Length: 194
Image (cartoon, rainbow, N blue to C red; front, top):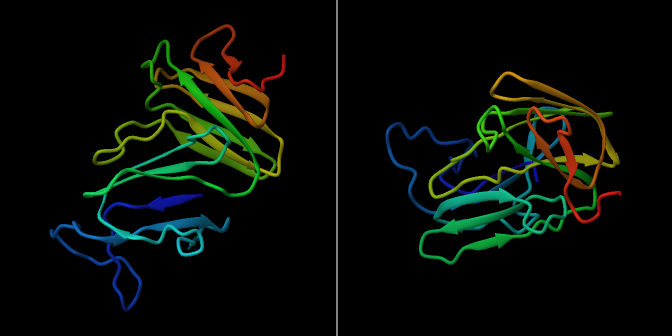
């Protein structure tokens, strides 16, 4: 999953483009969309293929790795409906997950920029909080590695201005990274090597 929209968008039925609604509200039932990154700067809507193209009145959305399998899952909250967990049953590619702990910056590392390099190029994440109405995203940062078993380089720029460089990390693990620590990186899951 590369991008999911489940709250408040409206398409022009004739052209498929987003409607310019001016100052009007987007309340109402909208079709959920799920986009796959084509790797060339474009995205393809794959919601119909993956069974998430539902028409519901979305109120809240969180993306997180519910079962710690390296695949992002979606938690939806719609008006007058029970909360729904959409479990990602996608392929078994490799991944790397980070939990950051600020010591000189804020504890939750909000505002920290993380860059991860593989043979395919760079990926970037920024730690954010409070992403939407009745929603928040996980503070854990998940990177997909595809077929690659490790990341070549990790660069973390903290809000304090400090930068940490970490070379080669094994994939398929959760790591705890602590700002300004003599031992900044700890593998933090049950499958970590000794």
